[in-house]
Structure formats: C-alpha cells, structure tokens
Length: 316
Ligand code: G3I
Image (spheres, rainbow, N blue to C red):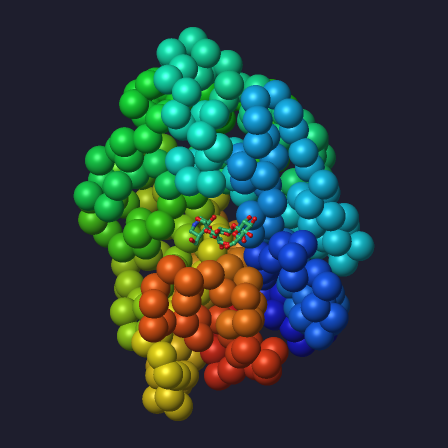
C-alpha cells in the first residue's frame, strides 16, 4: 500500500494514525479516507473518551460514542490510543467544583480510571492516562487534582490504569514539551521520579500543535532524553496551523514543516508512531480556538490532499 500508515510501517514505525470521532462518521467522503487500507493504522477519539463524556455524573458511566470509535478501529484493523483519563478540561463540575477532600478525590480518580480503562481492557494500545499536567513555565498546573492531592494524583491515575489493563502502554501527554526548556525539563524530571518510585509509566506523548514556519528543532533531543530512561515516545496530536487565508507559499512551508516533524521522530528509535489531530481542515479544532488561523491538516476542507501530505511521506 501507499497510504501514510504503510509508509510509516515501511520506515520501521508502529503506526501513522489520526484522531476522529463519531460526529464525523456520517460523512461518507470523510469515512472513505478514514477507512482506506494503509492510510491510518491508529485511531484516537477526539472527545468521546473524555471525563465529561464517559462519567458525566458520579458513578454513571456512558461508553456509547467511545464504543463506536473502538468498533470502527477494529473493523479497519487499526490500533487505538485512549484519550484520556485525568485532565483538567472537559471535566464535569461534579469533579472540579465539588470540594472533595483528598480521600474522596483519590477514590473518584481510581473509580474513573479503572472503570474507563477496564471497559476497554485488551483493546487499547496506549492510554493518555495523564493529560497536560504542567503550565508552560514548567510549574504544575493549578487544577482540582493538583490543588487537592499535589503531585500524587499522577501516580493514583497511573496505578489505577495499570490495575485495569496491565498490557496497555501508559502515557503522560503534554504540549509545548517539543523544545528544550523549562516545561520539557519538568516532564523529564517527573518521569525520572515516577521511575525511581516504581510507578508504572511507559510513554510520553508529544502533542505537537505547531505553527507554520515555527516548528521546533530540538524535539528529537527531548525525546531522546525520555527514551534513554526506558520509555517510548509518540507524536500524539500533530497539526501545523497558519494565518488564513492559505497561500501557495504557506502550503509549501507547511509541507517542509510536516517533513521536519516526521524526521525528528525518525531520528529517535523509541518514537513509536505519529498521530495527527484529525486529517482534514473540515473538522480541525484550530479555527474555533485561534480566530483567523487554520488549514493545519494534510487534507483540505474539500478532502483533497495538500502539499503537507507529500511532506509526511518524504519525512519517512
Ligand atoms: O458536546 C458539545 C455539544 O453538546 C454542543 O452542542 C457543542 C456546541 O459547540 O459543543 C460540544 O462540545 C465541544 C466538544 O469539543 C465536542 O465537539 C466543545 O464545545 C469544544 O470545546 C470541544 O473542543 C475539543 C477540545 O479538545 C476541548 O478542549 C476539541 O474538539 C478537541 O479536538 C480538543 O482536543 C484537545 C486534546 O483533547 C488535548 N490537547 C489539545 C487538543 C486541542 O485543543
């Protein structure tokens, strides 16, 4: 095959994947690409496994949408990345604003992680157990988890996930750790302390939400420091946005940028795979979050391949 996953596997990587979700599954032209043999070897749900979707009220779990994503992956022979167990965002207010003490919040995290991960036992290659624990300056994010439990919430989440599916790779996933600096250093130090405490941790996810012309060049150096500790790493949410409207010059720069990102994963043996955060500009999260920006993905609004597609292939 000649799709992106085929090319990635041919280059020795485990997968090239995409994020998607059920609200896009009714778009038949979109699904033709998602389902295309050799194109995507891994699937991550954009939203349907998050806390507000899976446990909207305490002890009441709903897996309807997430189950459909997992079923689709199974039909397509794609592995799954689970996203995510513990995150400050898309967190229902019964968790964030209830004033739980440390004992109760510990039990709330344990129940959530073990039920979610346990529901998909044996079906998920890797779980983003902890998502976005740090501020950009490398300090801990002040959220309900940290404010109530300190850094202990990380091991509570990881140990619960491990107990529920002993074979899934357990990740911490973060953005702005793709360049050397305070935030990357905090992640490296966190991994070090988890390892020395015997806490289960298998991987670090580099989200890679980049800007055209501003792709960091020290990502492989950060990745190598983490793989040197015996972990794997992955690019988990890649997209490269631009100020709209897109021009030929910007699209060409974006092609170069995608190629350079792939090359940095290729430079690190323990960088196991790459996922983009959906594959078409039609459904990208970027324009709703960054006004006036977009065109971040390798397929355009009309599901046509952009130069970025060739950049990815060239990177492998
Ligand atoms: O579910 C409601 C729906 O009921 C309502 O009708 C609709 C109206 O706007 O909103 C729906 O919720 C939206 C949800 O996506 C599902 O579509 C939220 O408003 C919207 O904020 C949410 O955005 C998601 C975002 O995470 C939230 O933080 C994006 O789709 C998703 O791509 C994005 O993904 C994150 C990763 O999880 C972590 N890393 C960063 C990445 C990009 O922000």
